[in-house]
Length: 189
Image (cartoon, rainbow, N blue to C red; front, side, top):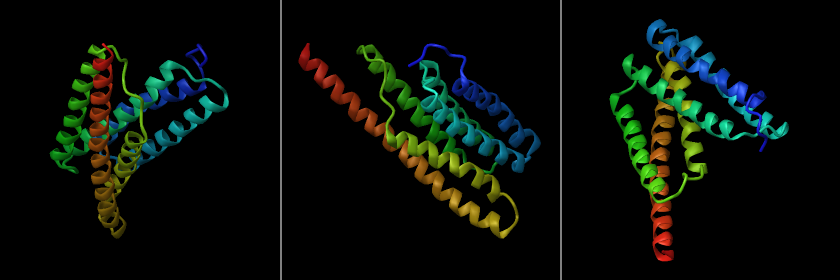
């Protein structure tokens, strides 16, 4: 892991971070869903590119490891909040999403009290994020009054349900992992 934080991958992550409030503004204040879709796809492309660059250029940093998933999480949160504000999504989705994050915040606090720094990221969480990030452009397309909009609505609903189910399943897996770590540590003490 290289120590220089000002590098290509981190610059791309910062660029993605700057796009989050712009993405939210496009949906809530401009209701320009077409441009919001473009911003979301650009974010996805630069997300892939920053990971590729980090590996290819050997420019992995701790800040990059933290910033990349944080930006993903901010896009997901901004999209859900914006779409609930515009009444394109149910508040239930927002509450289920925030409930999972609240649960994970408590679980991480308990883990840190036991001397651990955090959980390793696992595939289920990445798959959940991918499903949600695929769902949001489809939700936006689903608002258009057309056959494509109608089809997009149903596909988006499937991605949202699956993404949220994976988020909660991931939380369950982290809880099981926490219990295992605590049990092992208690036996060693």
